[in-house]
Image (tube, rainbow, N blue to C red; front, side, top):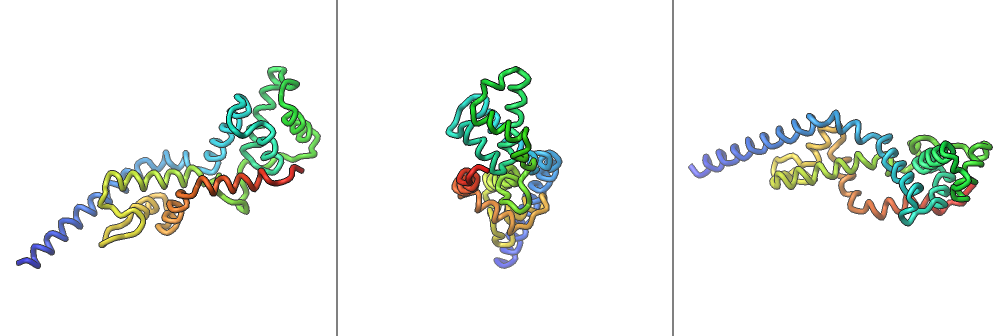
Length: 207
């Protein structure tokens, strides 16, 4: 009798687990078309372009115009795209001579073809921290949301026959559970990793 009750209880728990997993996957898949547009490499680069442009226009933040120029000269795509917009807008409004000296010198280098424009996104041979920025952020937030809403769902590893949140998210986004787990764990050190990545551009000598 006791064994039968235990089997029945396990069966009920399994049904609950399956129901939760179905609900989670259905909702992720429902919103996937919107996610796919928002988490592309182009979308991530666009976010950083807007941030650089805002810094150029307002002069706010620790990174000044000379720093953004330095990034662009060393192949940072969002910095170069922001400078291009910043310079063209100033020219349209007859404010080119009012731009910082570093920006004017950069514009002249580009116009004289002494400094080619970098690509619109980082090449596959470069670290993908910017290209994957929004995708990795979405994955992290989805896992955290799932575990907050359903505490019984294991976060990163399957437990007692239950699929992990990493597996559920990865399955819907067509990424392996191990890759999702790696992305999630890497986000813990994102600030330090991002700083090191940006320093690879900051510490290079301008061409």
